Length: 219
Image (tube, rainbow, N blue to C red; front, side, top):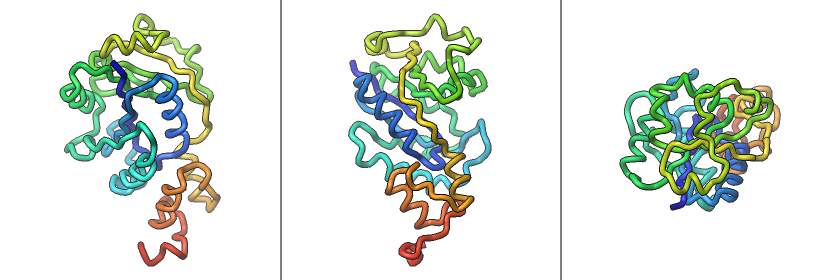
């Protein structure tokens, strides 16, 4: 059975690194589809800069024409903190037999033991770990996941949960924080986000971006 990918994040803003990396995973591993889940109220970090409504709209614009991608609004619709374990329980209830795989950057993966009820994660999903620039997993001293590592995607398709797969993806050196800094410094960040997202940022003056003249009437 094909794997359903899960990609959660604050998406503040969603950028080409999110999309290109996920597109590579989707195509290389032959996933059924990928659900992008906006962390509406992230409990493990400072509050996002853009509102949940703005972040949701940018995410919608970014994925709506991507084959195999879909926006999943369950964390926006649920009250309280956006704990991933709650999201995974909800997805598992809807898809009891489907292999699920949570896509995690190496930074998030190496900090997984700080997450709420993190020990339950592998009982609900597989993990697909994505390398990050400057964070080689080979240097990790963590050992809790070693026995769960799979080297063939077929092992994830045969089971529904419990495996860790380290995916060799392109290293794209772009981050949401760097994009916000660029915009705040009045630098051009248009190449870092999808065209529709850049237009939305300009239209609404997000992250300190001057409102483009053609959008002023819409703000």
